[in-house]
Structures are given as structure tokens and as C-alpha cells.
Image (tube, rainbow, N blue to C red; front, side, top):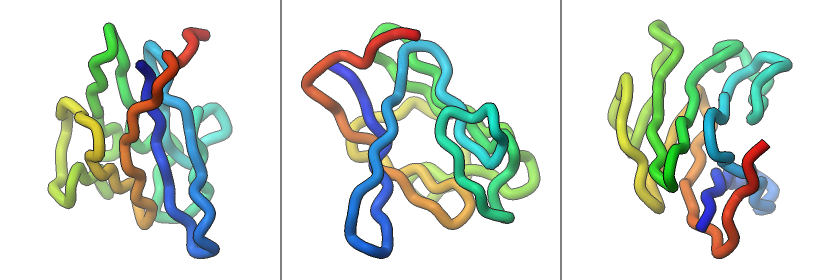
Length: 103
């Protein structure tokens, strides 16, 4: 099994981002795995640590923070259908039928 972050867009088309084994970084910076180029998003806003099919959210932005299901968190375990909010963007964690490859 693998995981994806799914972002709903205004035009109704979902954008999907793979969550890989290891670290997936989310932010505005060019080195982030999931880039959100908006002013309310830090260059490295948060990351998802994936180990043995267990996903853990880690906030990296002390000023704006990261929300999990509407609640600010520093670190938290993620489960399927959790909503992760980074700045003005909300993702939903979905499970996929195929494993995400390690890179």
C-alpha cells in the first residue's frame, strides 16, 4: 500500500502527490517534493516522514504552522482521510493500492 496527498483545485481537477518512503517535504522552496508557491507558505513548511507504511506529520514553520484536521500540530501520526492544511492549501491523505517506490 502507498499514500498520496490529494489537493482539490478551484477548477475541480484533483492534483495528486506521492508520499514516498522516507521524507516528503512540503513548502515553497525549490527543493521541496510538493511545491506550493504562495506567500503564506514557508520555504520548508512541513514534512511527512514515512516508515514501514506509517506516516508522521512534522511541522517546520513556527510562525504560520501546519493544521491537521483543523488543529495546529507540531507532530502527529497521519491516518487515511486526514486533512493537512499548509497555508491556504488543504490536502487529503489517500491510500493507494500499489506501494509507493522508494527513491
